[in-house]
Length: 268
Image (tube, rainbow, N blue to C red; front, top):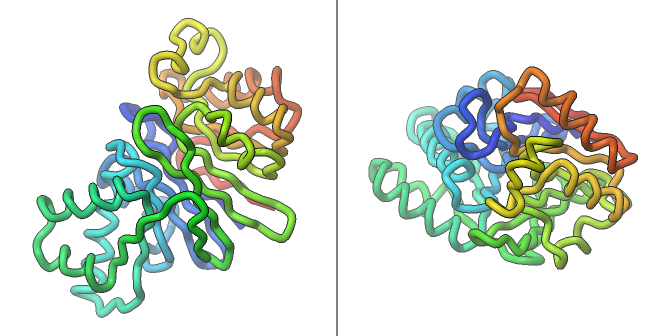
C-alpha cells in the first residue's frame, strides 16, 4: 500500500498544489480530494497515475481547494467514456452537500453529454457516518468529522484485521471525533502552521485549522503510531519539512511525515 501525496498546501497556496492524495493498492487507486483546479491533471500525470486505474474518488467537503479539481476529473473520465470506449463505472463519494454541489457545478460548466454521464457511468454517491464501502480491496468507513465551517467527512480504511488508516480532513479534530482517531496506525491530518509562526497567527482561532503542536499532542494522547501532516502554509517550502518535523517531535514520540508534493509514503 502506498500514499501518493499529490498536493500539500492550504486553500490559497501558490507554491504547491492544494492538499489531496491517492491511496494505491497494487495497480488500483482511491483518490482523496482533488484540489482546486485542473492542476490535479498535471499532478496525476507527474505521479504516473492512469485515471482509468482510479476506482473511486472521495471529496471531503465543498471548499474550492478540495472540490473544484473533481470537475476536471469528471471531464477527463467523461472523455474516456465518450471518445475511447472506456466502460467501467467511476464512483464519486461525498456528503449530501458535496454531491449536490458537484451536480450544480457540472450543470453550469460542462456540456450536456458530460452531465448525462452522471446518471449513467459516473456514479455520485452520498455518504454519511457509518457508510461503508470497499475500494482498492479495502474496507472504508466514513464519518462526520464534526467540522465548524462546513459539513465535512473523514474515513477510516482497514489495512488489515488490526491496523487502520484514518483521515480527518482539514480542521481541528473535534472531541467527539477522537474515538475514531484513537489507536490508528496511520493518521492523515491538518497541520496548518508550526512553531512561532503558529503561535503568532493562531490558525486554530482564526480558521479552525490545526497547528503541528495540536495534532502532535493529539497523536501522542490517542496512541497513533504514524502521522502525516498536510494542508500547510507554503511560506518556506525549502525548510517546511525540517521545521514541521522538529516541532512535532517535541510532542509526539511516533513517526512524523511532512511531505512535499508528489512524494510517496509506504504504508506497512
